[in-house]
Image (cartoon, rainbow, N blue to C red; front, side):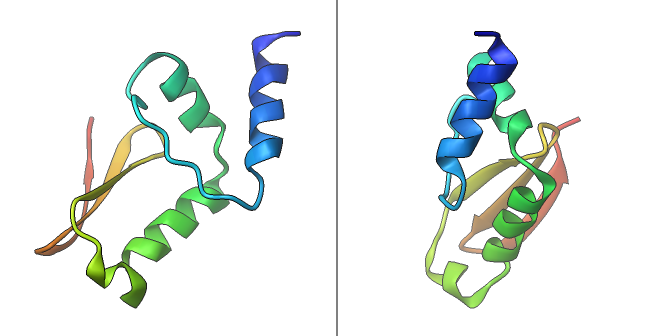
Length: 82
């Protein structure tokens, strides 16, 4: 089974669920993060901007392999890691 098939299998198992990917900067974490669809990224960003996220502080999400969305006690910040 090729690596694309393995990642596709993982993506299917995560469908409808929230995935927390640690180590998304390199290796398997990066490969897994890149398999997430744009819709998944949009959901994460929408969550960070929602009232529900108001009680969360220090939450970091790797977005699209190049951007980080952060919800801190000071507010929502979007910035590029490039």
